[in-house]
Image (cartoon, rainbow, N blue to C red; front, top):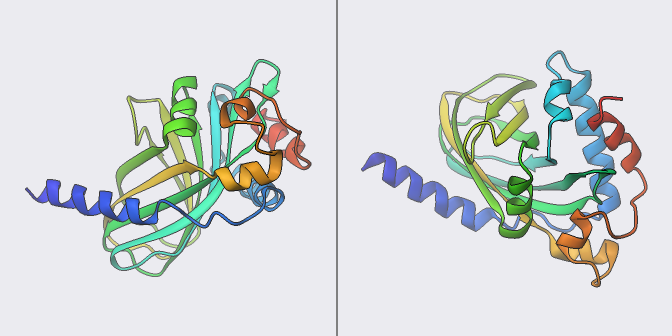
Length: 217
């Protein structure tokens, strides 16, 4: 009964927060995502090169705000799909999340979501995806991983970096949704999400650095 209650509370929180911020232009998202990926890869616990090499897709997300007890936050980022010729155009996504448990003084999280199957990338882009996990709190600027939060392992791997102090154990989840308004503003209404994930649309300035990092260069 308790597990069911926690699941219902978490689901309700995620639904309320799923809209995220949704107003940041693509150019700013790309700059922020570049900084996040550079910080991950220059840390003492970078994302393994083999993980990036085998990724079918990657979402780079920044999430802000959290509460004590039942809390939540919103954020945004970009999603990329690996193609035979390299990487797709970035698509804008929003993220909403909820936490149930003790979470003190949290300022936010930065996350890199690795999709190890193409089906997982397409499901996230066309249907949205909700991920839930249990973890122990960490203090300070910490990085760690939570694997296969959604789908059969190792379909999804999540690398997270938290700011602020987390206390105790928590159950957390987040929901990724495509931000159609930002994508249409960036590429025009003639390109669908599928078009962009297949490489069509205007290449975006600033993506070269992200692509090089994802390719281990």
